[in-house]
Image (cartoon, rainbow, N blue to C red; front, side, top):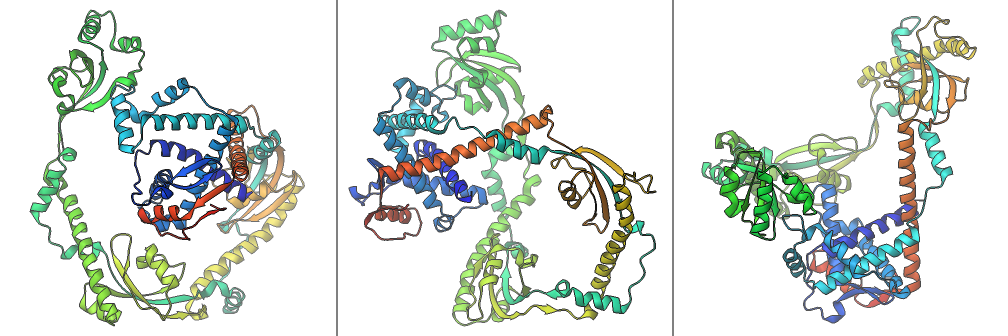
Length: 631
C-alpha cells in the first residue's frame, strides 16, 4: 500500500508540473552544450527537453523551500529525491503524449482558444485577455505563440485521454461503509470515575523499604541516558546587539526607503469599465446620470462580472490622466468618461482610504533592531572566518573564547535535551555525529549565529543513586499505589454495574453517555476510556487506569451503526467517497503511466541531466553516456 501511495503522489506531481512547465515563463540557458544537450531523454518518439526539466526542477525546489520555510540548496533538494520525482513526472507525461500521438487523439482550435483565454497570467487590468501581455510573457519565456499553443493543445489532449482512462473511478461502497462504520459508529455507556480523593482510606506515608523496593523494580525511571559531553563556543546576533552602535543616518535612510509602507498616500477603491470609444462611454454615463441604469447593469450588458472591473485601491499615480476626476469624486459615485491606458472608461468610486503617515519615532525601535541584527550578522560572518583561521592554526575552543566575543559553554547532550544551544537543529546534528577525532569547525546557526564544538567523551547510561532521586521515587510510588488501591475499590463497582445496577444504586456518582462516536467523544474523558469503550462488547464492564492517576469504570450499554440521516455523517461519507476515489484514481494513473513508459521505452542522456544540475547549482552525479533504463 505504501508503494501505491508513493506512485500516486508522483503522478500528482506530474499533473501539477504540466501547468508549471507551460506557464513558468522562466527560460533556462544551455549555451555551449550543443544539440546533443537539447534533451535529457525520450519516451517512444517524445523528447523531454532540457528547458522543461530545468524549469520543473527549479519550480519544485521553490515549492519545497516554501514548505520548509527557508531556501533549499539543490544538494538538499536532491537529498529529498526532488530530481527523481521531477524526471519521473516528465517521463510519465511524455509517455501519455506518446500514446496520444499513437492513437491520433487531438483537440480543436476552439478548445485551445478556450484554455488560453482562461489563463490569468495573460489578463489585463479589466480582466479580459490582453494580447500584449500574452506576447510579452511568451517573449520573456523564450516561446513562440505556435509552440505555446501547441503545448496547450497537447495538454488538453492528454487530459482528455487521462479522463477517459481513470476519470470515472468510484470508491467501493463496502470500503466506504467500513471506514464510516469505524468513524461514525455510536456507542452508549455508563461511566464512573474515581480519583485520589475517592480512596476509601488515605494513602499512608511510604516506608524506606517500600521506596527502595520500588526504586529497584523501576531502574529505567531513574537512569540518565547516554550523553555526549560537548564543549562549544558560540555567539548569536542577539548576543552581539549590545556591542552594535546604530548610526541614526542609517535609520533615517531605511525609513525613507520604505516610504510606500510608512507614508501611504490617499487612495480610492475603484472599479473601471473600459469602452471601445468615447461615444459609447458617454452614452453609458448619460444613462447612469438619468437613473436609467446602474454601473453594474452596464457591466452586465458588456458580458462582464464586477470582479472583472475591480482595480482595487489606487493612488493618483496609478490613474494617470484620470486621477483628477476620480479623486474629486465623493464616494460612492460614478465618474467619466475619463482616459485609461485601454481607452475611455467609466470609474466607480466605492470608498476613500485616507492618507496614512507613520512618524519615524513610532518605528524607530524596530528599524534600529533590524539594522542592529543585520550589522550583528555581518560581524558574525567576519568572526566566523576569524575563528575558522584560529582553529585551523591549532587554537583550542578555550583560546577562541578568550580572544573573541564567542562564549564558552558545555553540555551533556542527548536527544531529550532541547533548550539553549541544543534548540538549534545545526548544533543537534553536529553534536549527534561528532567524534573525538574530529577537529572543531565553525557551524552556521539558523538565526545567523555560529558555533564550534568538541566531543570530550561519552557518558554511559547511569543509574542515579537512590539518595539523589528519593523525591521522584516518592512521587512515582504514591501514584502507583493510588492506582492500585483505586483498582481494588473499583472491583465492587465492576461487579455491580455488570449485574445491571446503576451508579446511584451503588452509592457513587456516575454519568450516562449516549450515542458518542470516535470523532466527538466526551470532552474531558481520557483516550484510555475511549479506547476501552470502542473495544468492548455490549454489557461488558471494565476498570481502566487513566493518565491522570485515576480509574474509570465503564459499562458499554449499546452499539448503533452510523446515523445516515445526520447531515454531518452524510457529509463525512461524501468526503470519504471523494478521497478514496481520488486516491484510487491516482494509483491507477500512476500504474497506467508506468505501463505506458514500459511499452513505449525510455532512454536518458545522463550528461544532459548532470549539466542541468551543475548549471543550476546542484551536484552532478553519474556518467555522461546516453543509456536506457531507470529514472
